[in-house]
Length: 473
Image (cartoon, rainbow, N blue to C red):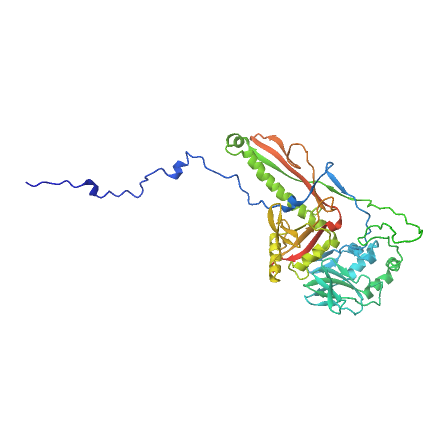
């Protein structure tokens, strides 16, 4: 009798599952029952905004801040401006009044004739415009480019006397000293466009204009008010005397028309649909998040204006005597030393991040490695102990040049200050308010968001600019 054995079911192969058969709940369906962990809305346009952080903010209760200064005597220490048509450059006649010799000369016809008499010249890098020891018989106005002024040093070698750039001039005393010679050499560092006026052409115009001739003849005789080395009206003091000399009396004179800074404003209207505000406020308040990002954008605009605004922006309010040029183009340690030397107690340097990188390359090429220092809990680069802070609001020109800002801050230091007004109606942050404007017929709520601010330079040497910094080399 044969006994049949049933095969063990565990030994049988398991039928293959179809490839598209799902064995468990998918993540897409599971998310319908789960609360997603999410971030608040992110924004790429937020920067460090160092300028807003380091400036001391002064309360301006009346909306206007007046800077009272000692009286300053100005005598042709400005820059000459030009107009260009294609490749032709011409000096603006009235701008010739920036030359000390022509200061306060008001004959417009003669100034027009003088402007027309200037001859445009082009120089390549390395060309010599004037050479020491040669007759000083021309007036030069620099329309564009950079030049180096050199002369004999104390020990017989050549030394750099200065860097000349757009709007500068030299040789303006030639009509007063017709037999003088150049005491320096001027050489083009970059390609330059220069306007020149020969002494002969000037004298011919003076012979035809009695007003010009009288103005030049009386230049040496016009009294110059006593002033200190910074141009301020002098305070007479005597010292080191013996006996009973007559001690002079004095007083401190003030500017009759001091500069006034009015608060500027950055504004926008934030619109939020009431349906969104009513129904979609968990776990994040929609209005608060909309306001947060809007305020970030306003603060970015605020810093941009405080750097670039033509009325109160730092780049446009530095005194001409505090604007210097780089020696060779890139920002070198020598250039920053020169910038620091123009003022006491420089507290901050501000530059575009690409400019800071260019300065780092120059330091590395010389074997210099500046230390980092801590500012408000953040490690930043420094030079000579002065923090070099990044500021992407400082523009970079199409030709790859930028600027570096040096400043001293605070009222007690006679420095640069920020201006604002706190305690304004519906204030949301200091000097920033949010005002409800109503609900439209489309059920859209509107909010006016306003930030009030400005900046003031208390004395000229509080702010300096290193201009035309090349960052591409």
